[in-house]
Length: 432
Image (cartoon, rainbow, N blue to C red; front, side):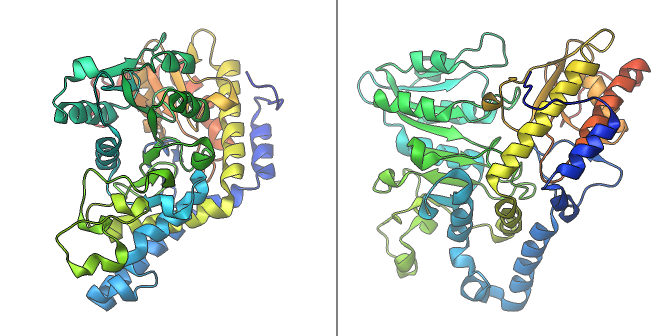
């Protein structure tokens, strides 16, 4: 356990931590469901007043300008994807032109892998991992099949010894001469483990392998340094820690070293901006991340991201990370102190080391984890469940308090003491 802070388990101490929190003021700018402790920001972040205002502005522009919004909006819609990409570039350590808002996470993954996966001779395999979110694996399997190859033979999945954690050295050991591309998550969606992206990128490049990362579970809560690390490409959603709204437009990053590559999946919004409306039949892509756009930008699904980015940039990603680590350390301390012994029997599936964890905590229980999660929901606590036995808690530094964390742990204790979980079915809902 991290002992850099000497935590206490009493309620007064939780209030003291909130009083000392220099980001606490941001909470008032979010719409928090009434009488609710919201711990699911790693699945869907909450709406802020800032995001609401940027969305309402886009609606007003549509209402009053019609098609004129493409060039006459406060930020002309024609350039909106590039503007939002430039804003977000600060969060990921990239140049403004290396990031763009476009498409959806899985579509961007397909586009990027199609561009960077070039099997030749014996170098035909994609290296991924067995703990990755399934949509990434589905996409990788599909891309291999599109090359006329078999995923069973050409997709290598790094194994995990315990079903929670990946060892970077195990990943690197699989980077042999048969690997053409490596695609990994920044943070594992179940356990919350943060991979060492700098080390993995260096190892891949030493072996001549391109590497990209799915950063959906890290951007907005963990600083990144894509350019300094030399990452080839990355992609991520905007509706988790970035609080862009359900189904909000995703992001992609292309290292400028690859701007001359030809996008494998093309569309007219990836065309050179100044000549896009020349309507020429020959495709010439923009020499930026914008060249990997395919379709017209989804303005109403992108607009809330602008307001959300204003908050993230105001808070500062380093300050967000510092508070996030303090909150997860505090949560882990309370679980260890109050919930680890019989009859509670909760344990932690998230790495203890600060450098190895993202923004959420995986709390495990051998039995009844799903029904305990449902009992929490009955008490207006919103976490989520991942089979077989993980309850994920994401204390967002922007709107969750230390007292919220303390209260959640008390609720878990009471749910076991009173066996409240027994009133719920073991059948999982469509979304858990």
